[in-house]
Length: 182
Image 1 (cartoon, rainbow, N blue to C red):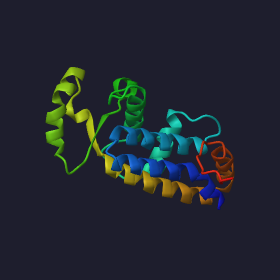
Image 2: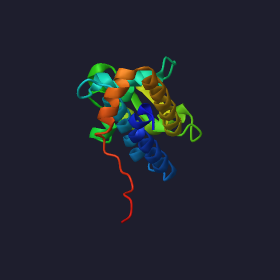
Image 3: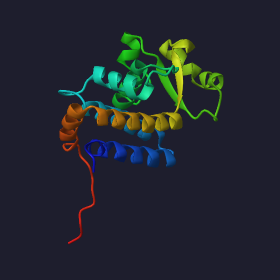
């Protein structure tokens, strides 16, 4: 097993879990795994503990990867914080740091306008204007994470020192492997 592949072991488990959760229509749980996977990958290449900055940096470099999207890495960070800490779309980064609210949907289900109409009472209650809302497709996001992790692994192969440090950290990540039978 190559060093980069060793680093990616937990990420591959995250992708498997994300896929199974989406297939089971457990979207909130799948999103939790999505954000956890980014947190874990970002932590691998930090010198110390990872932070908001590391999440945003990893997301910019590997997930957004220079493409023009309807959301930013700060929007994803705010969505992560909202989902993981409260189960809601809004978070401190939305209220104080200018992040947009991310709501999730399946593109084929309804148009953005239909979705806005559906959540209008919530937006009114929060005093959120529609221009601060971004819709992101669950399945697109999952596929984008797979692509981002592939870019991450390719990058690790070119950064020997970072990859070696990441491998040491990856060995500390909890990974469930079947034990050989007695």
